[in-house]
Length: 374
Ligand code: ATP
Image (tube, rainbow, N blue to C red):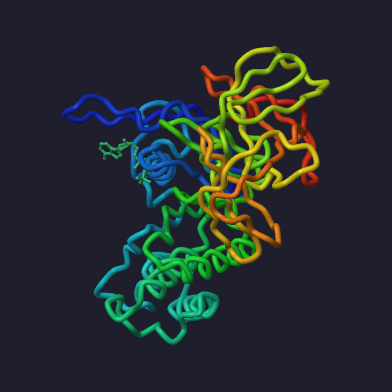
């Protein structure tokens, strides 16, 4: 196992329409044994970053270390990594056993018997023992991806790189394999970078998440850290479902005024008067509170079972998540509260976070706002 270190890496692609800066000066350290998720919208540079670590892309600037070794110019096959892709990339003419054996056969330290034993042990771990003599075209999507995972881990790589491995699977199987991948990681402790565009997958799987946009890492931290203390409007919007509410507001030193709400803000944190973008998560808005900040008409309700998501008709369309027993009817006028300790304020020009209402939340505590970009 090993640490992965990216120092100021940059990757450009030259095309007919000019140069694309796919990875723009990224610094990132993935600690030994850590499961790091790279998450961001399509085209933000996640795959290129991962492919650079794998040696499938040659970086233009910077260096990549795996453990103590500078692998910047080392070919893929000598980096001691294993990769799993969305499209499985199995050898079609080999059986599951043949696919899993392939990487081990080059090893001069193992006898045929040892290889067989190892393949069978890992096939059992992946729950594919019954499939060992089948070919990929006889397998379901889930079975193919289990085989691809088995083929990767059987080699006992220093580093595991996964690029959207669950995207082709149905929702139920995705959840199941998520848990299995986490279990494998707990058992083997292989340093892993996992790429996804799905923020929920990132939140549930990552020891740490790095949120990317436009070739850069905007913020990295634990899932709770990123959720509770996003360092920018972009990160706040990207992480969390339903999406955080945003509204332009004015702070006059005592209170916050928006289009459809107003509430007092007493804080001992430094905050200049002026215009900000306020952010508040749907579950942090309060239905029918003792001290309402405003009222609005219910546009749509979506019961999820234990909770109800209520969309309010306001210029910015506020979303409220509530565990209220009685859900309000469509068209009803409801009062809502904006707890000041749960708000975030963003600079309207740069989108950077300038204020978090609560520095301490859900057992998580840090210093006042600062960039956690690595
Ligand atoms: P997705 O989730 O859609 O795969 P991504 O975040 O993984 O997106 P990348 O595939 O890394 O993004 O692409 C980053 C940028 O680099 C995009 O603008 C993409 O079009 C461009 N790009 C990637 N590979 C190449 C290539 N081989 N040639 C030219 N441009 C490329």
